Length: 509
Image (cartoon, rainbow, N blue to C red; front, top):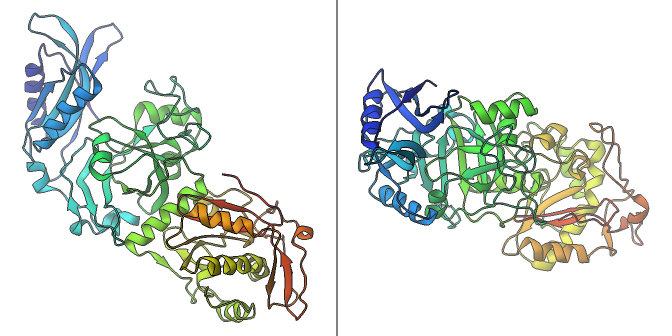
């Protein structure tokens, strides 16, 4: 991206030069910032990019922000947004005042077109790939907001099929955030040790480990997006769940954590050298697709598992991408159906539900050698369903090694041994359901399956998940079948509950 060094004496002189440069060679102004050269001279540095096909020239205007507080400056910016003007940059420039004295001035640069930009939005297409190609852009309500970093002009809201808050989607560039305890000023001059979103214990999110996305305040205020809300972020066919974890500049959009950028393939590795380059030099990505789900978070940072499961559920609800296991792919389908029928469970859970998967991240059915492992957890789930008498929705059961890695699961996840189920009860909070589920520990459960045998031989894992067979006390039932004592992991997350029968009572929230 080429740069221009400008030294105008006033804001009007700067705007004149910017508008002149924008008309040269089909260039578009991306940003303007104060820059100090090696010899100490202070100038204004302007970044430009090539004009998109069909994009017309627009006049750049600006105002000097005179507010003495951040709230007053934001009020000035909001006034321009309400006029329909499209903000370009909110920055500090070196300009001369009326007396000829050079000083720092905080300036808002914007396209003074009174909303004309909104009437000629370029629609995103199927060519985006992944979720970007599935979003019904033509059915969305075009946003009255505009931000630097938007590409294709795509920012729209969509009605939630369940009647909840609108869903917001955007196509943007991919700026990199390195905030949190893992970064440093050496990598990013704007680095901050803390992030706005925190874990339940008060710790900030480490952008080297946390899949996070930054949002401008105006976007959150317009659509009710809160810190901690879930998002699905994709580039091409790669996509991951993320959380809104920090507040960005007023006029910019498209900033994501370094971890998320690496996982999306924007950078080849997560070394400190790569992180420094990412923070200082950026990248050429222009088709990052982010779908935000207002009201989906609990105000706290989540574990990778919870974040991924919650975001996938939001996407599935919105776009209808959830689908049962395809029998054409599952060579043991008929055998599995017979096995499931032999468990003698009440008909509140179907065989297909236990094999739930989505087309967002590919998974495989559980190997036959692990089928017995899920039986105790299913028996507990039936008791939970009976308690609440409401629909029980399963989110996740078995995970292949590749799928588990893709969703950020722990290396020795109980899901990989086909012992864990993530679910929710419609109309009940996860905390309420988890509390009742945990109260079942120590109770005896029954399955009609004779000869129940649990295995900890997970072919894909050299070191399998924990399993204590002694605590489960698996034994023949008095009238046939098998009895066992429930002991295992129970944990509530913002959108679901995790339960497993590992033989060790465990919670980790």
